[in-house]
Image 1 (cartoon, helix red, strand yellow):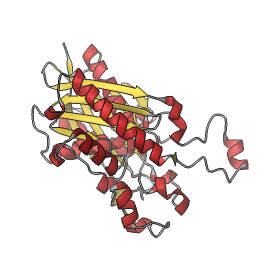
Image 2 (tube, helix red, strand yellow):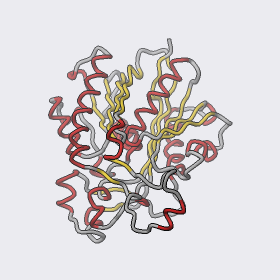
Image 3 (cartoon, rainbow, N blue to C red):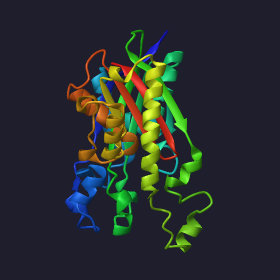
Length: 331
């Protein structure tokens, strides 16, 4: 039986660092106000107008392919997770294929926001296990900065999000090490609690032009409600993955949660009684990069030698939809 294994990792973030003090010049806020509520000190925002979601994904993908030690034409399928694609259509997956200059392989886009990388990992895992593909390129990439309300009115959302991309090569192996299980969930009745409602098929170009006061083009987040749901679902889906894999919380070598808010990660850490060395966070440097947050964090943790062979690594995410999921990996 085939198992899937992460064989290569890479990430890319824009050079432009935006600090909390920088944001205080755009809106009524402060370093203390942001750090206390989110744990974020800096984030990266694109300043180079030529930099696109697919191009950032390409830079991350090239690093992951090199790390895997394979040729780019060994990739036989692409999965691209993003909520901020280059175009309304086509998806960013085909643009990544074009940017890499590889053969005419399949490309699939995943629109599951903060849970997008976990969903993509689960899809890749099933394809590999079935024997259909041998090397799948999974990318999470986001440019949020162009779509944020940077006024005081929008500060509760705009201070959180950053731009960045992360990538992983998922390969077939007969080893016992690799992805042990993935677990996916959704609850659409809360779809509008964290969403960008427009533009939409019911509110298109003619209405956009005629109504300049409509604020539903900006991201909306019911912050307290999202927090309360996130901490419950994170705990549930982490425990679900461990139980399915016949593991206990004590077996976790490293938990890498989606970097939504440092307070959420700290709440989960305390609830599961994990030590600081068992949880990896980097939201302080990059903010919430949505589908890119887990691969960026996973890459940094790996490059910092925080992950060793046979370690049990747990990935978990919660986000818009609501959607949430986890993956349990034996490294």
